[in-house]
Length: 362
Ligand SMILES: O=C(O)c1ccc[n+]([C@@H]2O[C@H](COP(=O)([O-])O)[C@@H](O)[C@H]2O)c1
Ligand SMILES: Cc1cc2nc[nH]c2cc1C
Image (cartoon, rainbow, N blue to C red; front, side):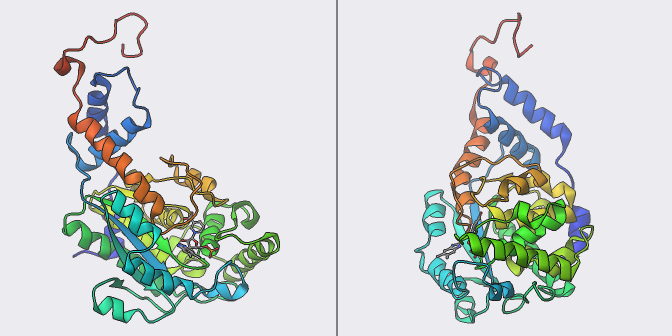
């Protein structure tokens, strides 16, 4: 199994433009007024071009929920205490969380990963109820030093690549990202600020629901983290190491692994998009394999999606994470695959096409 980061980055190719054109030609020929299935047609084109097939299949679907803790929680950046992270991991395993219910509704599985939770979850890993890839027990406090070492950042991304590779090897055709980590909107906003050049104030939101004073503090903490760590925006691993998180690195790796194996990956909300931004900075072509599930209510997410040049499928005022938006978007992605797979063209259906005069088809 090739999980070496440099080799995977080199192996990620843009989606083939000839296949895009072939898929678009068929979609334009379907027995509907031109483009009347809107963005679904763009999704169908993307799926066909990724799989290089006019019959793309995304039936076997998996959400991967990456969990990690954050030393920066010591600065009072979240509305909730850190112990909620391992408590929610146990809730995922028990099947009682939002992601369990929504993934089941979409006919998808859920894989939970310990990327760096600050609690002992080895019992769950030993029972194979979660995947144990703990890089360390929570990151360092980025307000006073780096979140992790460069080696740890690479280890986190390579873990994500390995997980994608394992799942795809098991037959998964559509991946979805998810996260769980109290405090993780802080590193996500820091990553967005560094990569976009926007100020922390322009990208920082309320996460789990902090008030005005706590938001001011969170912005100050992010400003301080960037000032003291001086991440290099041209070196994505450096940025991840200094102001990122273990689950964010894991998500970046999952996306890179998906792109390397030419598998589409549905990106959830703010934290998942921060992982996607790291993936894009490491391998720009990986964006071709990404599908944005939704626009989160988290303040910076619209900007994050702009940085990724991705258009979200849904806008449901979600701000939960876990992969919930990705699970909700799965049926739409699957519907898009069926549009190109199963619908008939004008000729095949015996339906008269548009007249030659003044038609968008012409
Ligand atoms: O996915 C999102 O857009 C999103 C937006 C706000 C909060 N969250 C979730 O809430 C947690 C982080 O919020 P916070 O306030 O602790 O930084 C973490 O577990 C995320 O999954 C997720
Ligand atoms: C209860 C709870 C559940 C979550 N799921 C994802 N992030 C979360 C944050 C909290 C606080």
